Image (tube, rainbow, N blue to C red; front, side):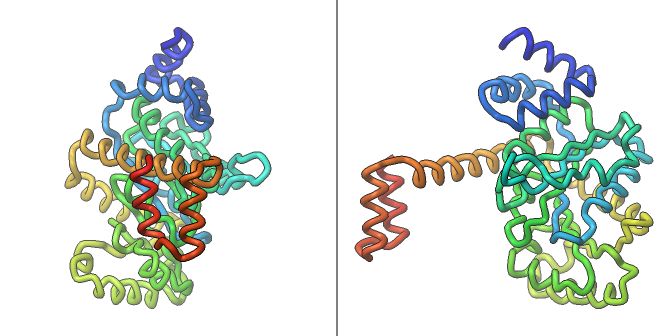
Length: 309
């Protein structure tokens, strides 16, 4: 490890915010320096609580995350927020900038907010965002909130990396139907109907309850809360539920092990996709032709591709 990287990690662990920002930038860019920093951070990880906040665009996730951060701070917790935004098709950078929507925390040293580009990843998370949990953990954050891009039905992967998953819905949008189709209800630890002052809020809660009833194992396990994020109403109850559920989840090492398995699976899938699409490989050409002409099913072709690795 170079002296520069060692000093950078030491400064991060000493809660130097500038060092944290630089480390997060390196982790987002990837490459050899990112890999070295990742390895250096592992002994410093304490096991912070990670909370995924997902849901459709317009549900008020950013406002709710800001209100939840305020509530957690009032309880003495330090908070890191990783807000995953859509990527610019030109620069590849984040284009929404959730930090602008959390300006109330700007002068609070106990809060660190970082916008991260999704890099086109449909599930609303990038590998870089997941790596950043370790950096914020080593920095000393008690809770790290992962707010996804709001990509719709592909967002269930946040549950694979977060310790607890909050799904935010809004009245009158048919979110319960979309959630059922996407499988989001299968992974939600808490459901929140935001904008609960809307005339259709009661109906939205009833619809979610009836949808959960279709899954007998989930019906009594997933609380459905109401919130008005703009006023903070219902946020204290959400924090109470998260604290209560956090006390029942597995110990930090097991949680991090599960998160790293998800990152490994995602990285392997992305590398395989790139390899198939971009490499000039005879096996790929033969398998593609076999599928196109009907000589092989897709499943058989995948099995042959795995054997050829």
